[in-house]
Structures are given as C-alpha cells and as structure tokens.
Length: 208
Image (tube, rainbow, N blue to C red; front, side, top):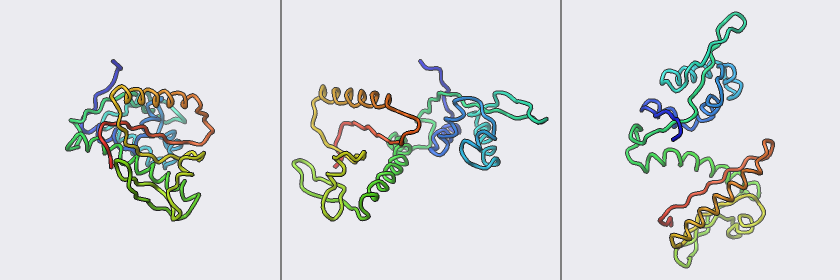
C-alpha cells in the first residue's frame, strides 16, 4: 500500500478546496519558501505567507528546513505527497454530495471552457430537443440546428453524454479501450502546447 497521510476533519476542509490544489501540488514537489509560492501563484507575498501559515496550523504543511538568507531566516514548507481523505471526516451529508463537491466545480469550469470555444465560432447558442429512439435528444446548436458538424468534425471539442445498452463484458471492454487511449494520448504531451481537459465518466444508469 502507498505510504500516505490520513486527513483529519480540519485537514480535509483545506485539502478538498479546489483553489488550494495548485499550492498543494507545488508544495508536494519540494520544500518552498513564501517568496517562491508568491511567484509561482502570482499572489502578493503576504497572501502566500497567510496560506502557508493556514496549512501549517492544520499540520498539512510542515517547515522542512530553515535557511539563512541575507541575515534572516527563511522557512521552507513541504506538504506530504499522498493523502487519504475519508468521506466520514468531511462535512458532506451523503457520499453523493461528497463526490459532487469535487465534481461540480470542475464541471462548471469545463462548461465555461466549452462556451468560450463555441462562441469563437458563433455568438448565439442554445439547445435542440428532439425525439430519440429510446431517450429524447438534447443537443447543443445555433439557430441553424444542432452543431454536429462542429462537434463531430475536426474541431478539438466534444460535448457528448451518451446512453448505451451494454452487456457487462462490453462495458468492461469500453472502459479498457478508453483508458488505453488516454494513456496513449498522455505520451503526446508537450509542455508548450495548448492545454485540453478530457473527462471520462462511465457509470451504470442513464441520464436523460
């Protein structure tokens, strides 16, 4: 089993805040000073120091070492790289709300990215609702019709929620192929290229 820290209730509150994820990732990599945090996150030094003290109070960040610089001590903070955050220690009333607390803000951000990309092609968008074979179809489009040419063409944009009727072996094959494709795509990653977000969710049940 991976060596990890188990979060307390106070730690869970901070560890699950989406806005703190960049800071946590930065401090997990190696010990950093408040000045380095300020430059990385592009925030004032006072804000960086405040966030570090906040993490230190909950024993998420620890002072790994103190260096002397220009005659004054400089603290370098580090965050343990792996945490388990039990649902039971959070304020979430149900497991569903626990997941939603992390998924919904990210899905809202993805929706914003999609809207911006769509508006680069046309200023006015809406939904087209039509009869389907099993479930009704709700498709993104403009006044001319559903944007199938755009969403199914070469533009790197997908907004697809599909209902599938699959036997268990078929569902397992689908999952393996999707994960294999994601693994392959990760090898194409180049640091200077455009960033994309890909979400893969496969669950039993249908969303109408």
